Length: 347
Image (cartoon, rainbow, N blue to C red; front, side):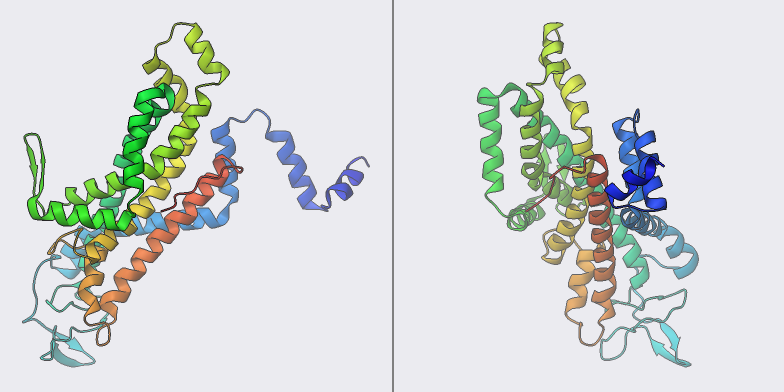
C-alpha cells in the first residue's frame, strides 16, 4: 500500500497516521478563525481551564441569588450578635476572643464569618463580581487605548510616533505595582475629576481607571510594531492606490489584521488586571472597604491567619484559580490563532 511508506517515514503508526492524513485533507480551504477554533478544540487543557473560568464567573454572577435565598444576608450586614449551632452547641458567630467561626457548611455562614460577623461566602461571591468586573472593564479600556495609540504611532510615524513612544516609555519606566499604588493613593484622597463628571475616591471606577491606564504600554508597543510591518504590505499599498484615506486604511485594512493579537492580549490582560486589582486592594490603593473584593478579603484575613486561616485561604484560592484559568486559556488561544506567535504580556 502507498500509505505504509509514508507512515513509516513520518514515524507514526495506526490511528495517529490516519488522523494526520485526514487533517491534511480537510485543513485546506478553512479560514484562519475556523482553523484556530479547530486547534483550540484539540487543546483539552486550555478548554478545561476555560470551562473552569466560566464556572467561576457564573458562580459570582449568582451572588444575589445565594445572598437572598440561601444566606439571607448582604455582603455588608453585621451579625456579631447572632448565634449558630456548631457541633451541636449554640455559639456566637464571632467568639468572645474575637475569633470568627470557621466553615460550617450550612446555608447561612457556609464558609463562616469574618471578624465583623459578615458572611464570608456572600462576601466571596460579591467580591468576585467586583474583581472580575474591574478586570474585564479595565482590560477593555487598555485594549481600546492601546489599539488607538499603537495604530496612530505605527501608521503615521514621524512626530506622532515620537510623542506617543515618549509617553509610553515614561510609563514603561515605572513598575506596574508602584505606579498603580501611587495613582491609587492619590485618587483615593481626592477622587477623579473628568470635566463635569466627578468620581469619588471610593468608587470602583477608580481602580478600573488606574489598571486600564498602567497596562497600556505593555500592549501598545507590540501593536505599534505590528502596524509598522502591516503598513508596508501590498494590500495597504493597493488601498492607497485606490484613493483610500489614512483613517479608512487604518480601521478597514490594518486593524482587522490585528484581530488575533488583540484577542490574545485581551484574554491575558483580564488575568493581569484581576491580579493587579487584588494587589492594590490588599495594599489599600484599590477597592475601598466596605466594598468587598478578593484583595480586601485577603487583607482583612491576614491579621488572623493563625487563628482563622480560612479568611485568607478561601479568597486567595479563588484568585489563584481565576488567574490560572485565564492564563492557561489565553495561552491556548494564542497557540491556536498563531502557533508561531511570541506574544507575551510581561511586566
